[in-house]
Amino acid sequence: FYFYSAPPSFKEEMLRGKRVIVTGASSGIGEQMAYHLARMETHLLLTARTEAKLQKVVEQCLELGAASARYISGSMEDPSFPEVVVREAENTWGGLDMLILNHIGHSTFNYFDGNVGHIRKLLETNFLSYVAMTTSALPMLKESEGSIVVVSSLAGKVGSPFAASYSATKFALDGFFSSLRHEFIMDKVNVSITLCILGYINTESAVRAISHVIRDKPAPKEECALEIVKAGFLRQRELHYPPWVVGTAVLLRDIAPEFLDSSIRSSYRVENLKRT
Ligand SMILES: NC(=O)C1=CN([C@@H]2O[C@H](COP(=O)(O)OP(=O)(O)OC[C@H]3O[C@@H](n4cnc5c(N)ncnc54)[C@H](OP(=O)(O)O)[C@@H]3O)[C@@H](O)[C@H]2O)C=CC1
Ligand SMILES: C[C@H](CCC(=O)O)[C@H]1CC[C@H]2[C@@H]3C(=O)C[C@@H]4C[C@H](O)CC[C@]4(C)[C@H]3CC[C@]12C
Image 1: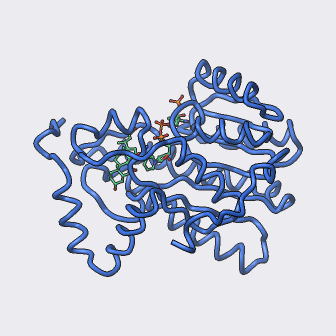
Image 2: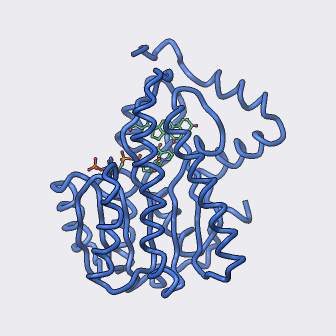
């Protein structure tokens, strides 16, 4: 708990004037992070596919006090788009302090149906685009001694049923970014990497996908978003949110894996899943 929760020393004014990219900012946790960052008077570049939603989020950010806010729309399924977003930040600000990687492509919550093509696409959106954005942004982040925030999931630490493709992309993030963190430290690159391990959060898409199968009450997206921003700014190695649920699962994974697996399986209302 000591290592993974943000210490109370965080002050909102610490982020004033910082230049931040938030991906997947048109809804859910990304949208809420944009609002927190706007209140903290940062410069924001938001991205997602849906222009109409981004426009509204940008307007709201300006009302909340963002130093500046703009958006660029496009799909992270397109391998050229990650670099386009980073160039936009470079052309607008000439630098970057924080890169928040949060978007995900659509996946269904169900038995794996053998669709390998879907996993390929999802790896492009959920994993390779994170790597590509990091690669393009790194010169600016080295210059500012900035931060990379990677939004992952409990499904990227612990295997669970009905999310095989999604889970694969999240485990890949842990492998890549944990390796990169070592290299940064060994090479004296002062860019922090914060991996955010989230449990069930009450965003519209998550509730729509699983509320008929999982009984647990989801945690609030507003608080989750604030914890992510704080952890990134404080250069924490990992964030576990909600701390108790995620912390317990990660601990049990190492000391009692069979017990954890069987309690995961028994927490699902499998009878409510319609096989596709
Ligand atoms: N909610 C939860 O329970 C949990 C969420 N997480 C993680 O939190 C993060 C945010 O999740 P959440 O807020 O629930 O998700 P949402 O579905 O609310 O938001 C996803 C965002 O990604 C964008 N997006 C979708 N497809 C693409 C694409 N092809 N290219 C670019 N952007 C795209 C969406 O906008 P648009 O459609 O306009 O492109 C939207 O802005 C994810 O990384 C997720 O894995 C982790 C654990 C639990
Ligand atoms: C299937 C959802 C995506 C829906 C969409 O694409 O529109 C998933 C998005 C977030 C997932 C949850 C998550 O990451 C936290 C938990 C991890 C556990 O290992 C499995 C249950 C989760 C609640 C998981 C369920 C699928 C998502 C909602």
